[in-house]
Picture: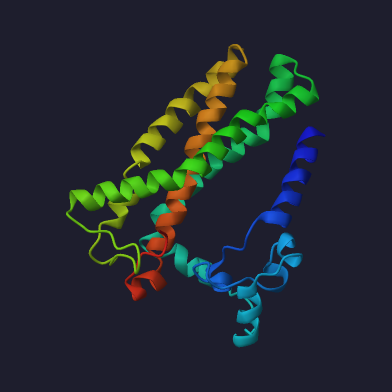
Length: 238
């Protein structure tokens, strides 16, 4: 019940305030969202930019997505390793989240309410990783740029054919992988020996943070290495 209530509150907040981020809809953020792509809050306060844009822009044609495109992208030599990294971390995420409440109820005799609250440390780790992950990626990018004597162009972006973007995005990956392994391996032993529940909850926090940051890292690099980005010779993620 607590999880259902929190999920419902989150859904309402997302509908009301979460902006559209798809580049096909809003570009780099300069194009106002329309129709179902708008936030519910925008329905009550339409901006002048949205009104002026709607009178000038042509209507877009509705195109059905082609599911085979994802297969082609997966087979790309740059995308495949990233997707496999993503798959390993996502598997860890699913295994932990699917068994967490059941394990705490069985091993520690938690009530359903307390078992639901055990997801909070993992969620807190995800929240902090989402909050600071972009700043860490930007810092890594600047460090690699400075190391190679590269002046970052924040206006038009950098040339992907020349800038070592993989090294920049993967700079923090060894740390997150080490922390994930160091938290994942003892997790089962901690539960088996019924150590104080604070210990597995702390491990959950670390796993939430490292997993979410790794997702952010891989998603960012996937956009950077996308064939469309290579054709534009630009770095679209930052």
